[in-house]
Image 1: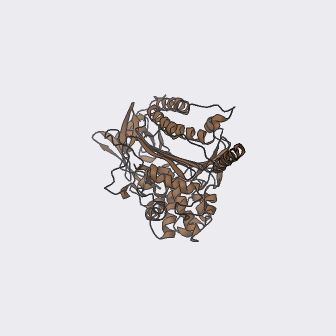
Image 2 (image 1 turned 30 degrees about the vertical axis):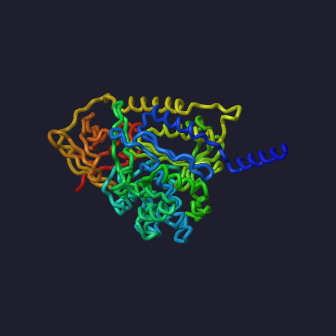
Image 3 (image 1 turned 90 degrees about the vertical axis):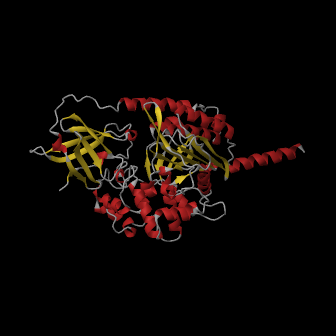
Length: 521
């Protein structure tokens, strides 16, 4: 009898090991979530964990809006931002499975008007290139066409691409770029015959029974009030800040979803594209393509210190690296006041999604790392240093934040020069890819108006000579910028350039650095 019992026990242990059961302690993880929220001052979070095709947690914590006190639950909608990119890749994978295109199709074959600065790149750019951040465009280059909340149509965005000078040669370097995913979303639309939004909802969200999720904030039914508002720290206080979940980002970042709905997305990903009803959302063959590194980078110093990262790369809408030697698939998403994180350990059949309404990524990483530690049973390894992830990341987060804000104030110029009469700086300036920027004198002040962007209005404060600092009316943008005018011999504007006062504080999508403003004729 004892031998029989031992045999059964051994069989059970073998089965657990084979199926990758990590025995995640959800009670412990809930404590970690609450501690992380408190430490990083996060008003609300929603978290889902999937293990071996079972949703072992889908729960909300805290409040959706600091001043209203509405509780976050598993169905509260958040903007998932750049986690949308994997959905756009999945949409293309589905169309590829149907034989309607291939990863190596030329973009110009599906979007005849598609043009980039370099004719060679225009001709050679493939669907695969759009999705792997190897276009040659720089980090966030051109994002002012979609950020924050512009009035530009998809046609105007595509028309602007040809004016963006590349930052590197084609396919040589990884540089995160949203506009290529906006373009990919339009490929979905042209090939499918329906808008990207409709295709995502009808062919991805609905089959997965992600019933509350929508491909755009404006598509959330007016009857559904269960959605979160972002919060931005300013002068030591959290300020609620509404944005429309990056609706203008389309295929690069527009989806609104919940922890409960995202758990179904995790299940399908971990099952090789198979949905709960047994049907394939996309084939395992296409998932292999999406999870294959198409461009690689050296391990980052911070990730190597945190979790012994040995490699990192980017697939098709997914980041790929390792956590203590185990392959990790994931992505992050960020909006002003709201961040999210998706992480998968395919070998352990484990997935976690964290949605939050504050912009502290470290709070999400601390929770994720605790889950991954349990999944890999690292604490049982004698040479493993068990970390307090919350305190480890908080120490670095707040130190970096303090340093960033300390350096955010412009220094007094060493050689101060007076300005010309204010009228000399007024007029309509034009950038080839963004459009018109108006500078005018109102009530004795120089005002700047980015005509396609409601939130980019502000005052010009003189700095030195022909250089001013733009102070936006909306302080929560945290995007003060220098504007430097180049004047002709008659002291009229010849051109103007801009750059962020602080690249540490200002989001990279405020890509003022890529503007070349000239007087409109």
